[in-house]
Amino acid sequence: MHKIYLFWIALLTESSHRYPQVEFFINEVYRVLKPGGTFLLTDFGQSEELKMLKKHIKNAQFEIVKEENITNEVIDALRLSTPERKVLINKIIPAFLKGVAYQFAATEGSTTL
Image (cartoon, rainbow, N blue to C red; front, side, top):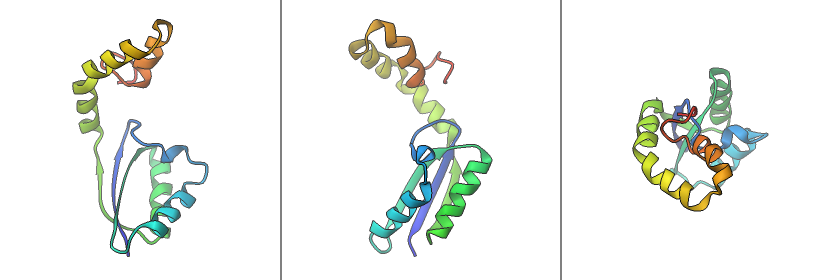
């Protein structure tokens, strides 16, 4: 049986929550993972979405080794990395899109963070 470490947060870090049929994604990961391999999944969602995600994980025969809410750590990392991300946004994003980019990047001071 493959093992999975499941970390969930209240902010976006990954995209499996956008997959129309996440169970196919999880089954494919299980299929291609080497025997004894480990799959690290970080995503976000409401409690019902997370329950469904865990159901798909268990149905795929993964063993959930650890599950942890890492919201606070992600928020801290976003705050700490805001200066570097703002420099990048200012360098590559046209002025009229910078506000949207700050929101999307969850920079400190944006309503996203």
